[in-house]
Figure (cartoon, rainbow, N blue to C red):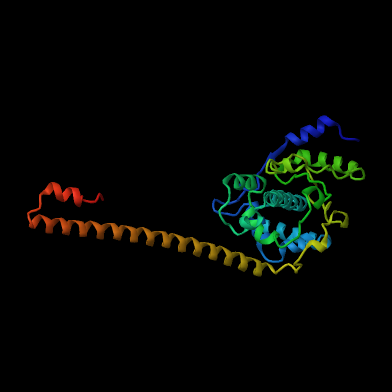
Length: 299
């Protein structure tokens, strides 16, 4: 029996919003977004997804397993694939902005840039700084998010549906599977709001973007390597976190050293001033004249 519109709306209401950046299962555990970003930053991982086909399916399943290890079980394979596409489209939108402003090189080198440009970049792609070292190795020149993929950009991954609506949704998807077509991509202005998740559901085992019709141009990839073993991935991620922590400590130590040097100079100047005042006083110089020439430094 064909699913009616009211029943479809009822199924949507039964879903519960679970943002990617706040679904950690433990107080200090990783969120879905943190796990996904860690995976992307490991050398070779994104290249496998970018290549498409079976490589993409394998890459998404690897992320699915990584989420499960962190007790995150409400993300589906299709939802993960959709989220990666959304992140890439955010990156392409930010890349286009920087290219148009002529600031791409300075921004990548983390040189000082206009604060307004910084805000506009982060509005389009909040994780641009983390993604740039990886995605900048791939060619997106002359492409817009619409050109980059023809897949459906619906994003079901922020929802967990109740058991009562699961069967209804599956029946609805079965009836529509032969008629499903890619929807029109959002414009660049709409991409700035990609973090506002839509409410279109995608089946848990969906591979709508695993086919060659949805593959990005493999020639655009400048570095295609196989997916590292899980232990290699975790070691590299741990190494990156250690390097970041060491850098934070180094910056903090340098700041403390500078403050201590500044304090030492102030105390030396004060001691020299007091000693000189004492010498002038012993030579019977009037206190008013001493105060005028050598006022006591403020602490």
